[in-house]
Amino acid sequence: MGVQTLPADCSQEDILAVLEADGAVIVANLINADQVRQMVDQVTPYIDQTPMGRDDFSGRHTQRTGALVARTPACHELILHPSILSCAKRFLEPFTEKILLHLTQTIHINPGNPAQPLHRDRLAWGTHIPKNIEPQFNTIWALTDFTRENGATRCVPGSHKWDWQQRAEADQIVQAEMSAGSVFIYTGSVLHSGGENRSDKARMGLNLTYTLGWLRQEENQYLSCPPHIARTLDPDLQDLLGYTQGNYALGYYSDPEAQHSESDILPPERVLGRMPTKGSSLASTTDDSVDFASIEQI
Ligand SMILES: O=C(O)CCC(=O)C(=O)O
Ligand SMILES: [Fe+2]
View 1 (cartoon, helix red, strand yellow):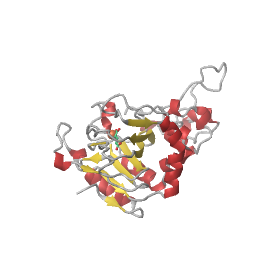
View 2 (cartoon, rainbow, N blue to C red):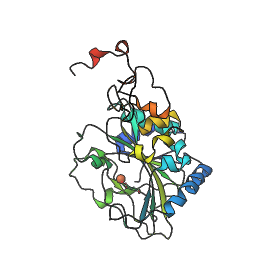
View 3 (cartoon, protein in one colour):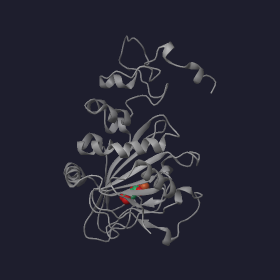
View 4 (cartoon, helix red, strand yellow):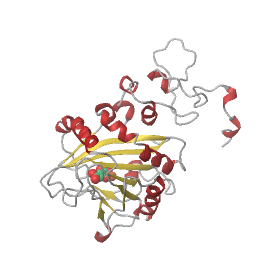
């Protein structure tokens, strides 16, 4: 048995059902060869300048290249891919009103890199998040074919429901074999890792992950995509980076240089020259646009 693979025209319900059951699913050939090529062409100059990882986890023969929203416009349509983004929202909505982009990174596993240790990505936050909260919806887009030989992602289907202490047996580990243009989707709770590259060519994956609107992002998106770049982007992408409030009181700012302003509580959209949606935040609300009864004494 491998990772369950669905065709590109599958429904969101199909994706979510397998993800719920196994913690991982592949959607085959969701983007075409031109989209893959564009992404590879745009990111390759940055990968060429990226040093290898500094430990066994990041991979001493693996290059991890980030800040992709700012560097590679080709990734924007993958981050905003309608069916993937809808699935991410539906999957995470039991735990949050809004979702955020958590990480953008190509993972270029070069020949000779051994398998990465199995792990759950949610451990980025330690063990502080209660088990019944799923904090992540993760994707790895295949930019080359992913094969057993070149380090296709390893995964232990079903392990998102295990006790965190349980160890995987060798025969429970499968690999996300898929052709370039396919996407491997996995939760923050399922055991997985990069595979060993025993081939003579690099395996290239594009890791794009999403998290809850109230959690700290793994890749700092405000530094990786600062306001002067963010202001040129699609508003949906600006939202995902975190340039809108996550909730009534979450994510406003004050202008440190302003002498006088109409308010010292500003909506983050302001730095992008964009108006906030009315009632979306503390910074933009008036007394009559918020149901204070719903937030009092919670
Ligand atoms: O490269 C892969 O296939 C997975 C990498 C991974 O799981 C990670 O770096 O957290
Ligand atoms: Fe991981």
